[in-house]
Length: 486
Ligand code: NAD
Image (cartoon, rainbow, N blue to C red; front, side, top):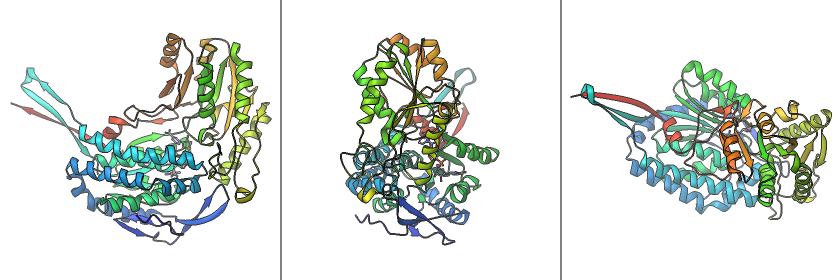
């Protein structure tokens, strides 16, 4: 199929590709080269209004479409994503700066997995009935699609997280207004072409591009969009909640993190080191699940530091198109500058940079790109800004602890609660800690081992609600209990 990328991207509304009504565009920049290579619509409430009208028009038919037919259509979309994995992976890398091998192995693969998973899940989705025998009654629960729902996603895993929301919403029979990040819009634009080619009826999925204040907020404010599934920063989540809560919208908020890795001396060292490198610097540290505060038992501290620094220094920062590059570009100039400011703050707070700490100057094609060395910092206390605020880049701190109690206290000492890892061969200790660490997701002796059926989400300022498996299908349906007496 034709997945060519026009210089001016268009919105996908009611099955048509159209420009923004007020004619305003934003630059699309390749962060590895700093070159503007396209323009994306900066849509506003007028574009959202026509998208909602198109979605409402499509809803009656789509919500009454047989589950089997939705299953076939969503699988067809998954097949087309797989067939076009090379074009999609290249587009993701040019937009985001992540290594091409990573886009292909993780991002695009997961996008088709998401469609396949929820296509299958909806075929097995069932509801409850309760027999109220003493009153000669039976209750059964309907789970009906909500109507028109909004999905807003970030730039770090662009197509992966966009489809993670859209697939369950569509599978459950909703019509969707979806907005990708304005920083990484291209693969979601291409998804519109794929959905059209797969035969998804017009208006069922509408993809509208633009920034947060103009386009994202218009989705949140629209009175006929009844549920919002959002992944992004805690700051934007707070603003969305303040608008949506008084309108009584259903809300799923997947927000930021400041995740601890708790490492005991009795762990499997080679595996722990290999996974800690991944969980620290994978995707340039721009994964919400990355561990950014590494807590190490004192007896293991010096040994860990030596090996961790050695391995980190071997990570090649380079052109994302080169297969040898382990680390690609930071997603944008704005984010690059934010991370560099955070490194300066860590120095001002008295931190010692053990490795990294600098921008990387590449040559050739990437001479103007936004690259940062993977950075390890020690000597900071838990209360400092560096250990409290999300950096979302290739920057981690290491801190020693004496006892299990101290490890727990340090792990829980932030306002966030998304994910944690625990490394020890003592399974009783691991499970004891897992019960007490305030995070929605805990990995024991592993990291980012995903099963799409499990509840995914955070506690505290990391969010509200859970995605994944039945949780997602429950979120995108409205329950209605019916009671019959006989
Ligand atoms: P962001 O909050 O700036 O933007 C996310 C999306 O929301 C974008 O599409 C943006 O245009 C839109 N947006 C911004 N302000 C908005 C507003 N007021 N109303 C409506 N929409 C708005 O986040 P980002 O910088 O794109 O992504 C990085 C953040 O996402 C990090 O904090 C990271 O931890 C978080 N994240 C969380 C998860 C998770 O599952 N918990 C996963 C990935 C990323």
